[in-house]
Length: 445
Image 1 (tube, helix red, strand yellow):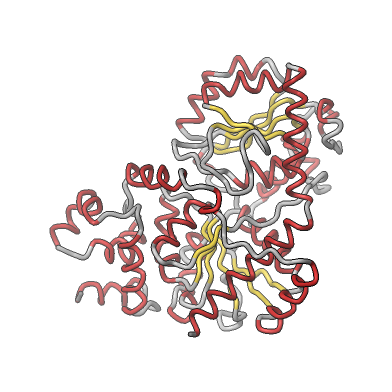
Image 2: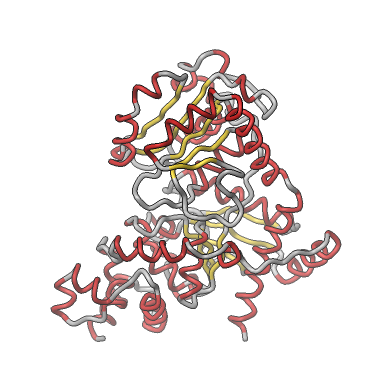
């Protein structure tokens, strides 16, 4: 371990060997990780006979190495996707209103404020998630403050949640926050999919943290199976009828819209009157490239709006003017009958941001290729899904057939009912607080 000790001091100066070994042990328990696969992918590590889980966690993740074989991820997700709904759910805490009020007040006495951290250099989506999470805490009367890596590193609340650890702890001054004192007492909220290089970059923080939130129910279950305190967390999206700011109406993407799609307020009752039939907002990938090119003639038959962002432009950054694109995406869903979701690769995660926060929140009908199971949103009940090659036929039925239109309105209504339900919102907040409290109490025992 001599080389490992040297690495920790030079590359992660704030992380002790004790914390590094804890993270390494947790890595070895992840079903998506294999010592044999890691050695096969990195002959130099095998030749040096370094411990693969330690090297992957503390060294390979920050070097940009591949940590997990895609075949192993696919097998693991296949197993997790077969779990029944209860296995994907967090332990429920169903309380009546007076009980909830008492529970919230009791939590607030111990933890009166929560800090939510995001990277100032990161994707604008993370700021939106932080705002939504803040609303969940405010519902319980708990004050929150959204901070970034430029704030006073010593002015943290007892409960600190770091959104998108792959951004926060690697960009700009965020690397200075990767210390024992911070990460061992932190909750991190992973927003990345397992097969991406960004997920690999988040591994040191995820495996060292006190508790982990994950936007994917399957990933949360993966971590729990590895004895990492974890909870599936999707903040409460709300129905939004007005997305654009006064400045946004001058954006080129808004100026090219037909007048009927510029400043409307469309609900479920006038779904048929929405001026755009199909909208899609997303970045490019070979899978999406093939789908849209093969079906160009189909989309040409309908008033469609497809924003296909090339990868060279990178993520939508909060500090740049293109942050208005997320509001425009929501607006486009609000004037579209169908919000289309096409997975960027073969890993069919439930795309919460596009499907729920953007599509369902705008009263649009979400249509997607097949998704991994979700504990709350069900295909045929809250959205439609089908094989990629059959999506054009499904869309045509929904837009043109009277039975399809009737079913579309029913599904939109059922999705909206989840988002507007005060009971669902209160119970979600109670589950977040229950998880935090449980992790805090267990760490002190």
